[in-house]
Image (cartoon, rainbow, N blue to C red; front, side):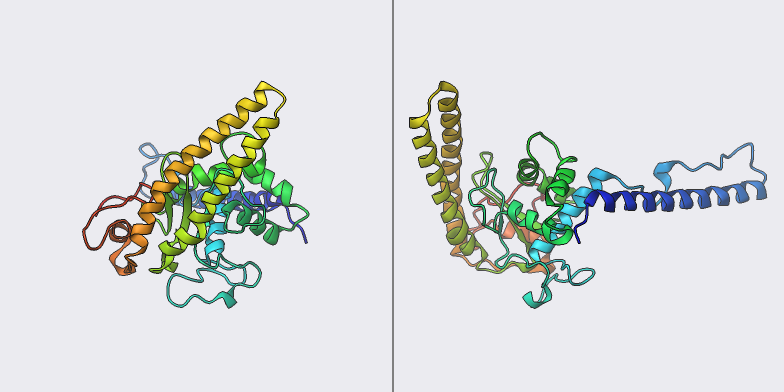
Length: 311
């Protein structure tokens, strides 16, 4: 049965507010008892400030972003719609534990600023839309995407706002949530957004960089070239100056991304040959640096987003 996220949030908001109000009332009642017991009515106030209560009321933006983070966890298999709680944080990865919604098979999800294939589930936005449809129903999908997009920055259609959030803001929020010890790591080619991709640290293996290069970067290059060719032909057929300018602007952007992607490809290719192993017991800071260094020379190849301090 189809469900609206709005209805779920409204119910949660009432429950959270009732819990907050009850706890605040309890704490103020206790304060009254102790103040009266010790005769401190003139010195102390029994009232408790809202920010001193240990539970928080519902917050639409915060809670929607938590839903997005949970969805990413399901995409990588950290969580499952079939089981409660944490499902995978190391060990043998068992796909049979995920029946309602399958996680990404090779632990790589692309974050691109445009959709280059409508059925490519390695695109995080396509995968996210499928998750929302699976959990809440196909019939309410568009309304639910609108509700999610409403709290995200920017303007435009819901899918475009969600895509922009994943490309520009998701990792920043993730770093804050995990206090700069991220469990999802973001590969990042640079300022032009030539390529970004997420992986789940606990599913990393030494072949992942090789897969990233051959199965994703190569295909992304092809997609960029195809888009440039398409826009070139559309430019030639354009009937007005505004259309021509729009196509030229997009081609300029993609050419910058392609140039950046070629440099990134070389870095990934170099490190992929090293088959770098990570030890989770060493912690995020050590491993974040280790994955970006040639183990033989110690030279650093920056392939991950900034935000984790140097060891």
